[in-house]
Amino acid sequence: MRVRYAETDQMGVAYHAHYLVWCEMARTEHMRQLGVRYRDLEEGRGLRLAVVEAHVRYRAAARYDDLLSIRCWLRDVASRQVTFGYAIDRPQDGRSIAVVQTSLVALNSSHVPTTLPEVVLQRMQTAADPVRMSFKCR
Image (cartoon, rainbow, N blue to C red; front, side, top):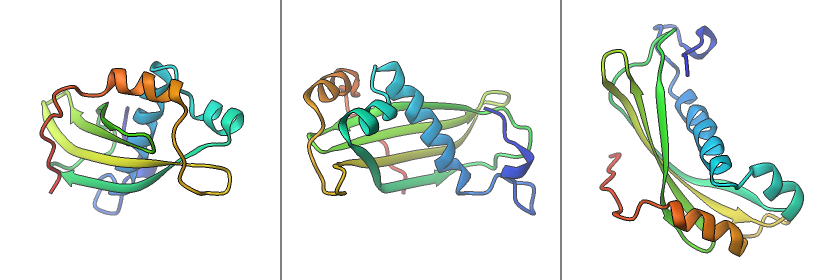
């Protein structure tokens, strides 16, 4: 993913909120690879996954035109909540740009917490990090 000019602030650095947008992109693709599409959850099951917690540890500045690598993995899966970890790196110089963690809760069409469908839970639990990597953002 390349940092676009519109994503930078007056200092020429990627604006901090864009990191979460980039993580959303990575999370959506990761779920798609697991066979779980947001669109299917929303349209087919009336479910939404709402971000209830986000932690970002900024380690280095991402600047305009930097090429970034964003890795996403499942850290924990419960009946109503899933937690993802992310690593944003700049391969050109090997720098860690940020580490991120988000937790999402399943909501029904009335915006009430609900359980994830069994098939979704199975696909996600299979892919969850089995060693529960240490991941401190603070």
